[in-house]
Amino acid sequence: MCIKEILNLFKRKEIVVIGEPPPQHTLTIPHLEESVDPTRTVGNVDVIGTIEKFYTDWEVPETYQGFWDTVKIKIDPDFPLIAGTAGNTVTFQPPWFNCGVIAHEFGHISWDLLTHIQREEFFYLLRIHISTDPLVELWSKYRFYWQVNNNEAHSELYRYLGQFMPLELKKYFPKLL
Ligand SMILES: [Zn+2]
Image 1 (tube, rainbow, N blue to C red):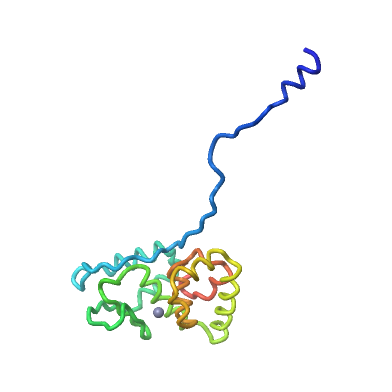
Image 2 (cartoon, rainbow, N blue to C red; image 1 turned 90 degrees about the vertical axis):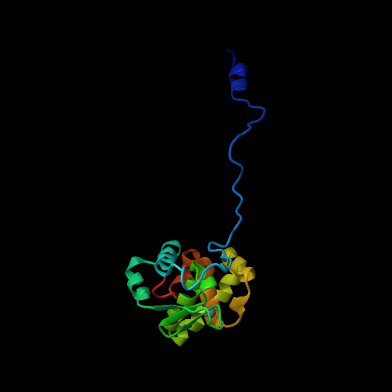
C-alpha cells in the first residue's frame, strides 16, 4: 500500500451524522394554567388530595408542609372572588380549587412573611429578570395579572414558574422554595 492509498483511507467526502436533530430550545411555562372545572362542588372537591398534588407538583419541601397544613382552607360557592386569602384562611370557589390557584394564594401568605425591603428587592430583581431571563420574559407575556401590583406579581410568578424560577428569586418565597 503506497502512501497515497493510506491517505485516501482517511479521506471522507462527507460525513453524515444520522440521529437526533439539534435540540430546539423552546421554552414553555412549567405550570400552565388549569381550566376551570364547573363540575367541582363543595360536596366533591378533594381538599387533601389536591393540596398533596400541589406539594408534589411544585416540590414544596417536606419541612415546610406542616406550616401549610395549618392554613385553613374554605370552599365557598358564594365567595365573590375565584379565591382569596385573609390572614391564615384561604377561600376558594369550588370550580377554581386547583393546584395553580392554591399556589397563587399560598404565594400571598409567603409574601406576608417578607419585610418591606425584601418586597422592594424582589420586584427590582423581577424587573431585571423580565429583560434578561428568557423564562421570566415568557412568563411576563403569558398572563398579565402580575401587572396589578407587586404582591400579585409575586404570587403569579410562583404559580406559573414555581420551583423552576431563577435561583436569585427563590429566596423571596419563604416556606415554599
Ligand atoms: Zn392574588
